[in-house]
Image (cartoon, rainbow over all chains, first blue to last red; front, side):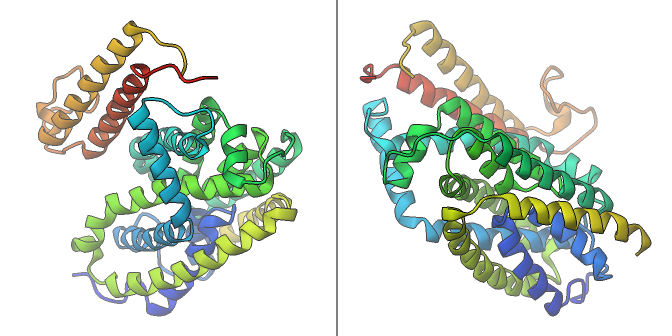
Length: 290
Length: 77
């Protein structure tokens, strides 16, 4: 019988707060949710069914916050998609439609790779040790993206017009596929998409915006797909904690997206790259002795 | 999306329909009942490959949308 103490309410608060901001910061939420319980000596493991159910709830909260934050943009984008389907083509100056199809094209590879590989990768790379090493590599990836980024002239004042003009469909597909890296704990989904955005010539701000828009359907769909597990027997004993964790996750996700959109107006991925490299290195050294 | 070819459109429609039918097969049939040439066939397994079905459905849908765009008027560059 599953008892209510699988995750305490205190742990749910900490993990919820962590999930909300680390999902959107380019620092790997999955990596942190694998490493932190180990560092704190909690008997919580990434592949435990009840922990997966807990994570489903916090992910759903993050997706809802993202959807609410960009609600007006999504309404415009969905109208654009509708127009393009009606007209059987994307109008030359219909940037909402173009952005909508870029998001669709970017979501397809991430969704398929996630559906087909998630279970296997989670089993192979579930250990805190491997998460620490991949966190270091995530830092290298972010730093590398800043080093080799393309710098395109920024002529339009509207964020979405700039993104729609700068990103092509093959590039959206590539950026979307890069999200699959996040199936490995330690690699960041938003880091992969932001890095990909820089490589195709977006500014840091536009790359972050594109990453958040791209994250919404994939995080939401992954959470909805696994929601039956939360309401099934795997959720026994963790539903209350999952609700508390979700509320905490929603608060930090909202603060994170507000902060990051402002941060990237003038800043780069470099601080996050340094954090990931340093945190990953320290954890890789410390964890074997815990 | 500016090149228009009836052959490409036809192939996309055909592949899209096949993939959507395949998705239904994945959802309806357990792994042991799937034809042996379909990925996911496992003798003796009662597991339903729901995720395979979802992936197949969305790729099929994407191909049908692609075909739909192919039949539209050419957009000015």
